[in-house]
Image (cartoon, rainbow, N blue to C red):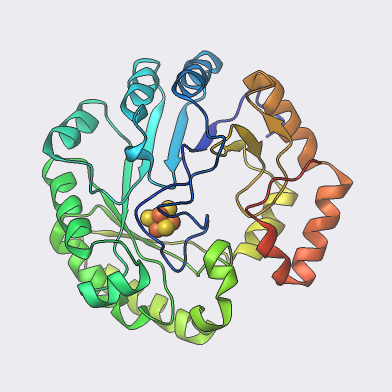
Length: 308
Ligand code: SF4
């Protein structure tokens, strides 16, 4: 990361609000979970313009539900006009045909929709407030628009057995990639870890089954290789040129770490980036990582925002 004057990749949580209360949600988002001081339209559009000025090539929107933010499309227009690539993690319900066509015209690099069960009963149990039918229809619309959507499957004890059938469903819908990986011990998943997390052997068995299916499929399989502790350990050794901006404009190192050394309300984007780069070298951050590696229960602090 030290080779760059700006991040190569900015992850931007526009809001912490969404319509669901998914059991494995990393961010503990939900219908009443908007932060009290989320960025205003003016502040968000300024950040979009600053991203373009800084030449940041990739911006990924996660949630909460980014598409539900009233100025989401204005932000995307600024980023697209400025040459930034767009990635969107969404429930897809607000992406009608016209929105899909617009995203295609804007050459959105990646649109991801979660399907966490092969039936409404399983999907909606893992994602209370969500809509299996809505997610399926969204992936279909995105595929028909030529966007090559990605289907994300989060493995839990509730839906692990459905993984092969969801893989087949995603392929039938025209998904480009089936994305999965070990359950991340963050947010609600951390709070309900004992009841939610599959055993390591069950997860490995499912991953092997998916790899076998992928050998005969045109759809790509992407299995994230690390659990969250390994992710943190690797990133400390070699931080990505990435910065995470949370809904109130503070800048974090990683969604798994509670440190928020930057603040785009008080700092320029360049200053926030410098603060993030410095923080990765901080003894306080390194000591906390050592403690997390020894005691994963400390991951319950991931969504907090601490000074360094
Ligand atoms: S996983 Fe997505 S849709 Fe589900 S609660 Fe979290 S932000 Fe909302």
